[in-house]
Length: 111
Image (cartoon, rainbow, N blue to C red; front, top):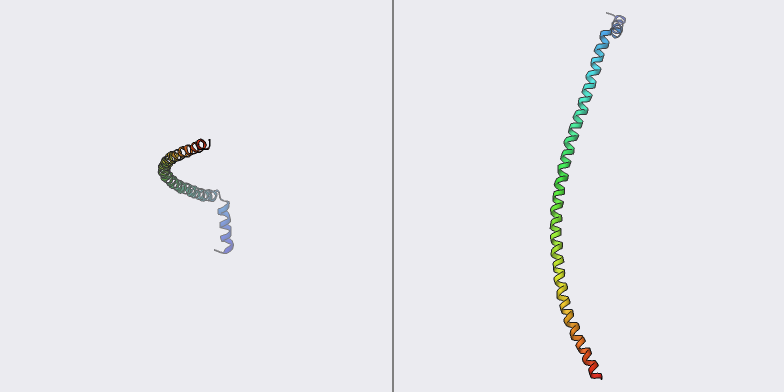
């Protein structure tokens, strides 16, 4: 077969309706493979998002535990401060009472 004859047979095959059906099959196979690829990509993205969701929930749980710990420390600090305020008030009240008595004593002595 010569080159010219081969070219003619290829041209005839392209014009032939059967070759169009074969070409359509190749197009459909390519399309189905690309759709399968997209579905696989979506699947792995879903798996990735679920993993991220689990990590976020784990982090939220850790933050809630730490918040409880800090709330307990805050309550303890507030109790210590109120105890120290009570002690300071009692000392200050005793100090001001003694000072007032001395002032009255000075006023009485001056008269």
